[in-house]
Length: 382
Image (cartoon, rainbow, N blue to C red; front, side, top):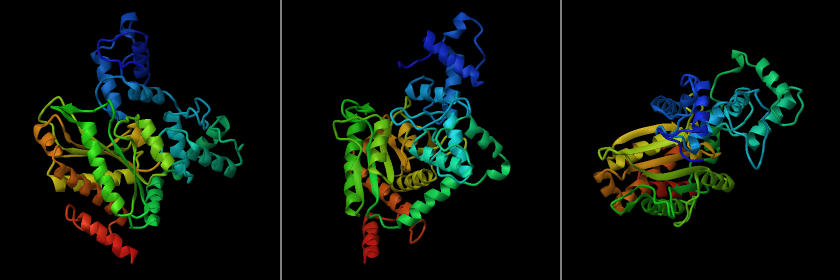
């Protein structure tokens, strides 16, 4: 679909306006002209919706925003839900189902609103335990059973947190054997942010190879999501990580802003803003953020939940790291320095090590070195 913006009109705009009105974000249309006009009121509603859903708040209706608007119109019970391999069903109704499964003790995976194999397995187990038809389809019979169990006593806790922490605990503190997908942003003809001949795609590819070398030295299995001349979309990158059975995805980017004064580093993990989150992704984002701020002196722009596809569609924890603003002279100059990229690579590696240490035998932020990580790996091997 084409990107819709202020000043556009037509049936596509009318459809989006109708959806926003149904969601209570703007008043219903008052006439024929109002139905198809992308005016300031609609732009404000779009920005509000984007902020609520963890999307980039740009006031434009692109593929991600349109998908989220479509998903928001679905409520549990409004349609049958099933696992479709070729075209997975997505929507708020799926997220609600996943949340209920988790609350009832069934591992439906991260509540990301995508009906996948893990959600189907959890649903079948629920149906079997409650004497329902075991077909893996969330139809009227299953919805009635879920609503009958919707008492406050069946709610509460953070089951995803406990499961994810247990996975890390069982995997142990050593990095050897961990499978990490490094995802350098953009690529090929898509250079990403480009300022004065400095291209985001080239910088992130170089950073990715530096990080890959350090990870391999520790015994980790490090996989790059793309080649230097490739630019898969975020869905394909997430599928690559899922098919590889990755333990962690690290997506590398640089940022831009209309203001040349904007600068700093930020990390993003999956989170909807209403409680659903990747708990390990959130922990990993915080660790990377603290290490990079301490080591580089870049302005701390914080760690935030988002619903971008690279974060939402991966089955393992994923973090997107925005390392500096290429539109800022200081950040661009520092990112252009290979020695600075070495510092960033070391900081990310140390943050990954901290995640698996679970707080044991750790050191103060910014003081753990690559040599320390190697020494710890050798000590654990003996």
